[in-house]
Length: 111
Length: 114
Image (cartoon, one colour):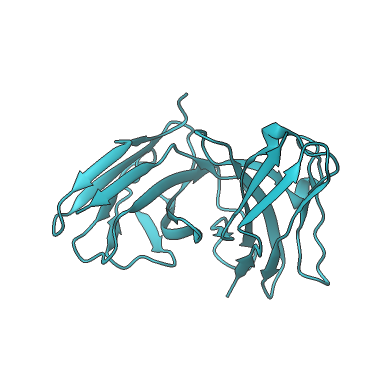
């Protein structure tokens, strides 16, 4: 079975402060990890995926297989980063592209 | 914006009635998905389809049914057997069935059953 846990339902930081959204997973095979974001009144959309090893909107995430984590980080938060963030996992050994989502973290960046 | 559309945006039904939610995509994607989004629970997979005329149950399929007669369409029926149908329903599609594919989401349908 695969499982994704986001321990923080709510996270509040001030503009310019660093931010880290935590994600831990449980999966016995080779996982593909993603971060999806939902801004207010917009659709859920992909933010980044670990296989691309890219930085999007200043966010990065590193897959740590030893700690089974995929935390999302940004050194200087901006007000426009306020949104709901979901960590998601798909497994190469299971049914292809089906995703298991975490519970989500609502990030608020205060001015 | 096109891509993947869901209708209607809001839907109200009386308890005991079946209701069908529409999902259409013009992205030529092979795979389509239905999720349910509840506060504090994230997204949970109801059904998914990797190819026309084929679909699989997700984690919470009880009380729901789907069909995939056309590549571009994946309607979801919420039956009277679903014990707690009031929720926000999201449809998604992806280009293929590999685990690395991004999913593209529709705007969602909020269903209220009273």
